[in-house]
Image (cartoon, rainbow, N blue to C red; front, top):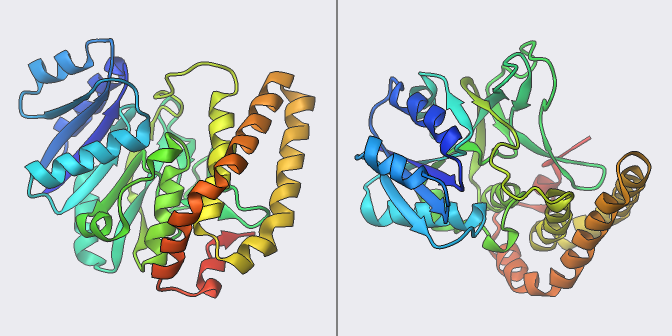
Amino acid sequence: MLSIIIPNYNGLEHLVTCFDSIEAQSYRDYKVILVDNGSSDASVKYTQEKYAGYFTVRLDKNYGFARAINEGIKFSFDKTNCEFILLLNNDIELHPDFLKTCMETFTRVPEAGFIAVKMLNYYDRTIIDDCGDFIKGNGGSPMARGNDEKDAGQYDKEEFIFGACAGAAFYRKEMFLKTGLFDESFFAYYEDIDFSFRGQMLGYKCYYQPKAVCYHKRGGTISIATEGYQTELCERNLILLRAKNYPFLIYLTYQPFFLAARLKRYIGFMRYHSVILFLRALKGYIRGLLLFPFQLKKRFYIQRTKIISAKQIKEFFVK
């Protein structure tokens, strides 16, 4: 059985489409858990009235993506006997065979600890949204493979890759039991990259399944419209990601590239965007540096328990 965990914050307009696509699935052995981050709209009421078989977990305020999905995962552990978990954004529509394709993949590829899918743009379905997550070799910034590219079948090969976008990703239950849950200090953005990193270092491989297709309204779940908020969080979380997961020599090796990439990015904000965006990015970077010491305990545990070599970790980076 599969648990489908959907974090939500004032996303009623998205849930209508998302739920309809779940109900249309050819695979039926699932439970749906909506985790609501203190919505003020009718999201919970709609779910409870129209989908009585769905579980709802209500939080008192918006705790962010990481906390919401963690609450959903813990609820699944306590209230269901599901052995697999699908994390799903509320702004996604699924192809009718989406669940079936990935559940069959877990059976056919037992080495797969988690599965990345082919995410296309909801509004223009010839455009790629995400075909698996990677880390750039020029500084360690995460990248969504194929984002904004025209889909010409260039990512239609099944293969093992670095990680999965948690907007739509499948996981074996045991992976959470051994790797732990998502790091709630991230709040939102890159917490899935962090989780992929930790899972890989414990031997859990990510398998990319291009036949599992969904359609994503990228940015549809962003609820805070302040200019630069997303950029600030991303810059902060990059520091946390590297502080926790990079072995020391790899950290030192990539530090000059990372700093150069940040400098180039910040100059770009000044030249092509706004001073506000530049300042928010810089603020995020400084916040990350201030939080660096608080990641050391996590770092020591991660580095002590990893079962793969630094050489293998270096292969996570792409040129």
